[in-house]
Amino acid sequence: MKRFTISLCLVAALLLSGSCHRVGGPVRTKVYSFEDSTAHAQMTFSAELPTGTDKVSRTIRESLLDLIDRQLGYIVSYEGQRQFDAFDGDKGDTEAYVRYYFDKALDILARDSDSDARDREQYMAEDADIDEAEKAEILARMPRWEYEFGLSKDDDNPRYAVFRSQDYVYMGGAHGGVTGAGCLTFDKKTGRLVESFLDADCAGNIQPLLRAGLMEYFSGADIEVTDDNLDDFLLLDGDLIPLPAWQPFPAADGLVFTYQQYEIAPYAAGMPSFTIPAAKLEQYLSEDARKVLGL
Image 1: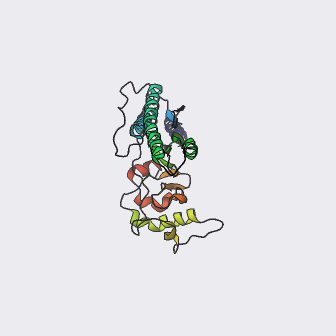
Image 2: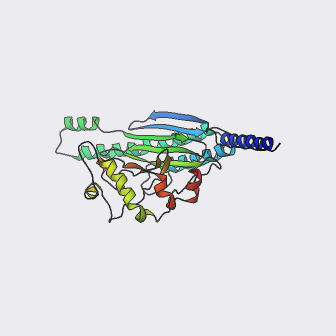
Image 3: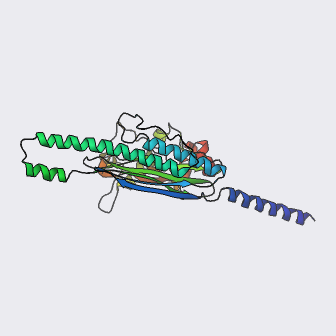
């Protein structure tokens, strides 16, 4: 009888475990894609958003819809001013929501790129050192503005889901740039965004880990970067390597750190990225991070 009771307890535990796994099941999503162009600009939009009606899916979707508002509502805004009113319809109508932001953002791109084109044409018209044929050729090669909005689900497991917010912006200069919010980690138990993975003041304590990761990133087949020459590859304000503006996010082998273009290195360095095992960061992890990592 005692053995039978223990067996029942094991069965109950397994059933509860299976139930918990189902609660943290995959986040069902749908990709919303649009593309259009104007006289001097082109815009593409791709957003993968949760479609489920459960609380977790709805909470994640709400956060991502707010992100779309923050990204596109302030598109090409140099002074941090909103470019158009926020969507005031039913946020439950995801199709209408994302279409609204795409259309409004495209209008802003059209307005500003047209203004830029007129300024370039005026400048060329006033330049007496260039003949008309050269002016026509230069204007024919005038670059078009580009904005690529990207939001996709990168990872999904029973404890957390990771969505990547990464845009590309080009406004007729020497080169374009990557913007966005980076990788966003959501707790699958609550749907809440993990806003901070590490203690904000831990950068000084983990300098050896950050330096080791950057040395690995910059090293290649024809170059070896060491602690002695790493600073030659960086553009820092002082000696301290800061934590990246984008939050680290979890992967199978640890936390992934990614720095944006120009954040700590020249544009040609790309976006320095590396992984640090979570065990090496455990004492600096936030409580929310420890939960989603199962620590």
